[in-house]
Image (cartoon, rainbow, N blue to C red):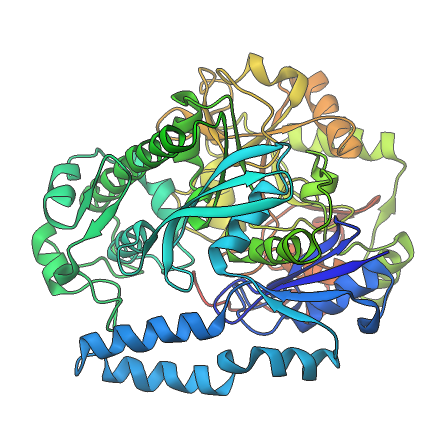
Length: 583
């Protein structure tokens, strides 16, 4: 047996992944263990978990692969600072410290932290993205499009995947980055860069795309080949001070919204405009990619590939036979891609295929035994009941029908940014005020944020138009059932749907089936088990803390049911409010 460890770290969303004979054994983000959202630090705890899950020690690894080439990235940063001199000096002072302290010495850090003395490789950033999506796809060959902020130098690439190789055939370099353009508007609308881009996407349906021409006239030019040219006089990311500058705001006619500022219709219209441009851009570059490759399958990766609304529009208008998006398309997924680069490109192993199931693609994280859960409950003197599967599903579905909010903690933690049924908050979509209630009183976040529906896969076509299997919440679909499930259909009539089949999550499938029997609705709200600024919960203790610090009604840990009303005097360890840095 051969084991390959992939690592992403030191920018945001640090993570680790381990392959056993080419199959993913485990993968996890460091944030889930440290409880620091988007934690960029060396993923020591994630690596330790992966090794435990594989049942090996560090000496049994065949190879360790890092997801980018630090010296190439440092060279790009230094050249960029020189071009901006003297304006980039403050950025130079700030960045040189982190580079000389850690980022240039990754090989030494890995060897020291892990006591590893074996073979170490560095993939290129976009190579890792491309490998992550292609080798997790079902295709023997495919065109691969990766769009993000920036790797070492590349911001957008087109590649080809065939059997056990991926090859980049066209790339566009920093600073002309569509990902950075989208991040600029993220900041302008008052959200945190590299964290709040999904909020900008969620805000867009509340506005109208009235500023698209203004944006295209001033900020960016996009060719028929998907080449992006930014007008750099409106941006400051190359100086390190901010993503945008005063010139940017002057064109739009209003100052950037403060994070806690009023969300006016103006910012909704700006969000709608850049979202419309994103959808057009994705269509343009993928059309060009097919033109130059002639391939009928498309793989997407990079942070921009998490824009489920753009993905939904793409498949609706797609000229491709099939489209695959890696479930963890951002930098955390770079750990999977790096491991694949080592397995296929360096070790030159024959291609093996990963099943398109939640178990193989997403349920890759830590799990806890019945004994571990019970010990945690007893340690904190929690009143609970223990039920069999049938009793559990009947009680949970009945409570959901009665408008209760359920914290749902089962099996292996998901890898990637989405809660897909194992670390979820569940609620009924039948009540119009449920969206506001969960946003404000449970999640403690902005009221405009949409919720994703989870639906029985066999009933999905009855509730969503032209829907395909959608296991990972990566595409939006239209629905004409907003009158029946008002709290999970967004302002534009779409929803980021997860379809669920019985084989992949039998317990949650049973809850949905039971809920349908009681309400004639096979749909539930499924949102991540956390509050704003907090990583998704990993452990039973994390779940208990989040439960008792919010207005959730019931917590389900495995087959243990905890009622809030029966646990009114819990310890300060569980009830004390934790302040997370807002995203």
